[in-house]
Image (cartoon, rainbow, N blue to C red; front, side):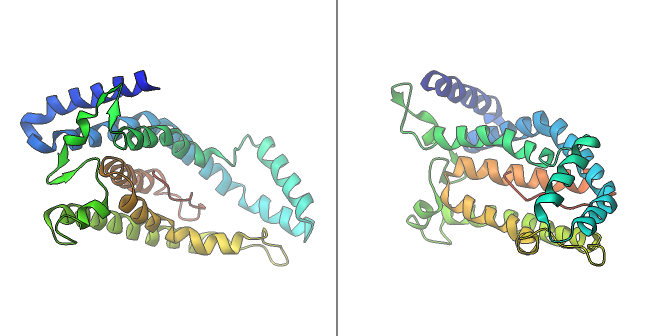
Length: 253
């Protein structure tokens, strides 16, 4: 793990050196944004596959409603029939989770890299890099201790919070529209237990990103903000013709 971290740290440093003429002291921060974009490009085929899966599940909604009506309150039989239907139509109910799962290692790699004082037995030089005035290894609490909420470091975080809030609001409104357009259960049909509570929470999940940005190192927060913004644009494009599709839970990602 230590050798791998050293290689990754060297890669970030090289990216920063290449970007230094354009971004100067914030070159390492720009390198992290570039790294995030590369990760999202690699994951994009999975996102497209997830969108195809969502479309397939949307087409199955009438059959799912019929299964609910058929099995009534017998949730065990309904779940077995639902799994059989998915298997028959070759639809995976987990496909929407794959893009987020494949991004988690990249996020934790950045988190660990900018939380470690040493890399390969040597001082972690990346901790000296900044986004404007805020250290990439620092957290919001550190920024508040250096000038307060409106200090130079605090303003960097306020900028990130603003981007996250705008993206989260966009996701919230879009998710509410999609859920409102989704077909209601057939008359007499039984809703899956707990789904009502989940549906009430889902529109607000994008706002949880604000908490993540506040508590992780700034480098990892940059990854989260970039990835979340990418996801909002990507899903708006991939799902633009699916007003009634059930939205996947917001993530990093």
